[in-house]
Amino acid sequence: MRAKNNNGMGWLFASPYLLYGLIFFLIPLGWSFYLSITDWNLIAPVFHHVGIDNFIKALKSPGVHAAFFVTFKFMIVFVPMVIASSLIVALVVHGLPRFKGLFLIGFFLPYLASGVVSSFIVKGFLSYNSPVNTFLRGQFGLDINWLGTPLSALLLVAVIIAWKFTGYYALILTSGFESINQEIYEAAAIDGVNGWQRFWKITLPLLYPALFTTLILSIGVTFGIFTEVYQLTGGGPNFGTNTWQMEIYKQAFQNLSAGYASAVALIASVVTFISIFIIRKFLEMWGKRNGWT
Amino acid sequence: MAGHKKKSLTIRYIIAFLLLLIMVFPYLYMVLNSFADWSQVDRKLIPTSFTLHSYEWLLSGGQSAEPRPWIRAFFNSLIVSTGSTVLMMVTGVVVAYALAKLQFRGRNFLNNAILFQMFFPAIILLVPTFLIIQRLGMYDSYWGMILPKALSLWAVFMYTNFFRAIPDTFIEAAKLDGASDWQIIFRIILPMSKSITIVVFLFLFMERWTELLWDMIVVKSDNMLTLNVLLSQMFGPYGGYPGPMYAASVILTVPIIILFLFFAKQFKEGMQFTLK
Image (cartoon, rainbow over all chains, first blue to last red; front, side, top):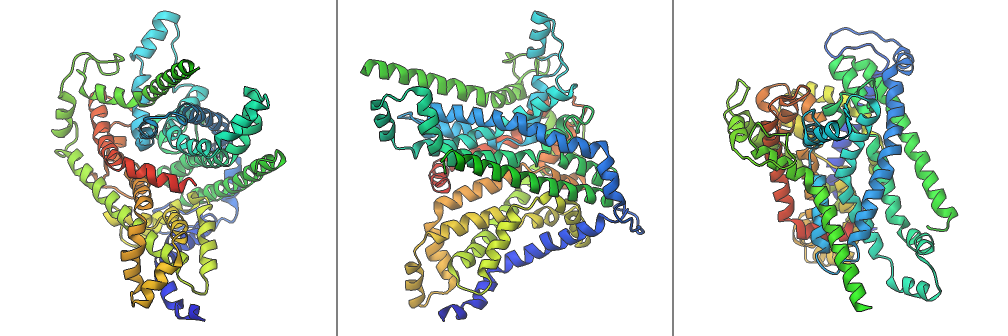
């Protein structure tokens, strides 16, 4: 019954969240639904209710189609890339007797980079007269317009983001490796388990929780790509890197179609929510079926 | 056998070092090019001739009408990032204390609400949040940049998990001695939470320091721009002045790296907890 005395204090201490949740979650959420059925243009005092017109327009628009597919393309490219690179780093670093912490700190540094800065560096590094392109032209006669084709632009953005997150995920995976008891390996070695079996039967199952975390985090990242795309391609070429955030930003703050952008954002949220839910369930099932969790 | 092991260890150190070199190469490239002679910027893998020209160009105002917008932008970033981070830490601690250590009706509901909101795709909130800030008269102001980022669900979540691991006996003992909840937070909880506080602080500050989208849409005046936004706008789509672009990138990146390295040891210790 002591619990009762605390009611006031509890709500008082929780009040920052209540206030914040109201002003920056519930009200905008409702407002967003309302905006999505209007044709408001962010400035004009008058607007009309247009029913589901925005949604119909959005579902037919090339920008929205692109955003839907580009997100999954990023996922297909970026997730294996960043998991592989962070696994390599973790594999190399986790057993080092000395300087392990120093290495991990070093690998974490890219996480501190602003997407604007990393985009600039890549842009400069791959500019027409850069050493890389001069070399490629001189030696192989290759004249690559890195940001000019949808595929290479998408790959570049994926590489930049993978560079940023590798050290962070390596930190998670390293602590996963460290939680594996070395005696298990020794026992397995006595039983004659070879390298590949060892990885599949021992390392992977025991690493699975850490791997699951990095997978979920990296998949989440693909739904929120903006800065690098804004800085490097503006969503192009030919919508080749047009992410949800890019599309919504363009519609709301460049075309000033607040109503339409809200409809797109609503679609984006539903797609994101469902996709992550399905992928998560799938990963959990995969782990369960193999007896990893 | 021992010799073999030693040799393979040496190879591992060499591989680790090479990997690290690849990972920090973009930073090296940025720093070297910021000091490179303008004729060599982006022309050489490792520049050979150095100058301070790029930095002088920036600090004299460069092509901008306003003198020294970079210094102003640097302080804008500092104000916004610090204000926002401090608020996110305070609200994080206070709310987490309620959720972890106070018994009250509706606590479970709040816990679930926060979890739900954490996994809710925030993109849907962008346009209306902008409108709310506008209606509150905070468009083009520091508060407009700070207030929507005054509470971090992630910080609440991290602190709640950490506080739950602190035994209630400490708190009950303090309450018997007549300590208030505030005193318990400041005298008992926070001193026990140093490592997690460093981790939360660094992640929040890094994220805030490198924010682009929100700071870009909520600010209009040149003298309100954060460093990241100014950088993005000045050297945007058409490039030009690559040397100063690298110099400005250095000015944006170096403070956050220094801050991180300063707390690196505690950060590593704190991460051990968060990753368990």
